Length: 163
Image (cartoon, rainbow, N blue to C red; front, side, top):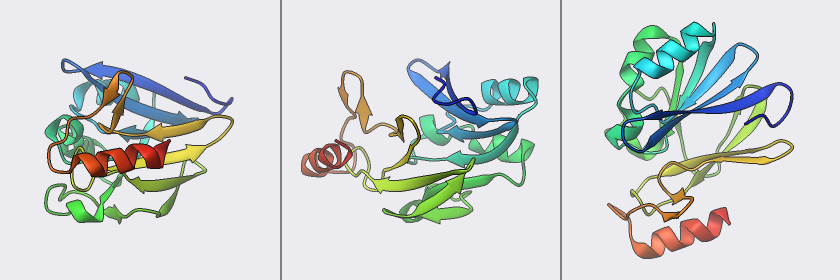
């Protein structure tokens, strides 16, 4: 998806039903929820991209499984995750909470807490010509994510929040 001449988002299909999102501008990239590392490393190195940041929406292995290997390849990468997940995402080096704002690839990115799937799930939002929301397992094209740690009420409120 291209939403202006500089910023593009591509999806790498991995495992049985995951997508690793890569948001890129010029030769810089941000990776969202890397389940595994090899396809990301191949894509980024094959296209001469520098990995600036990794966004982690929640702690499940199919969202963080490739992060350590990406850190090995790009030791200065920013790993951004929920402050509430320091134990389950211990390699994070930038901890965020609901309402925080970050500057990534020249865009202001807002952190939105979307509890339900997990007790500390977060999403990352920014606007350009179109709104962009990296939502993890809160919302899918055919419904919402399963409730593992949160409550149905929390999921309902999260869906209302992002609406």
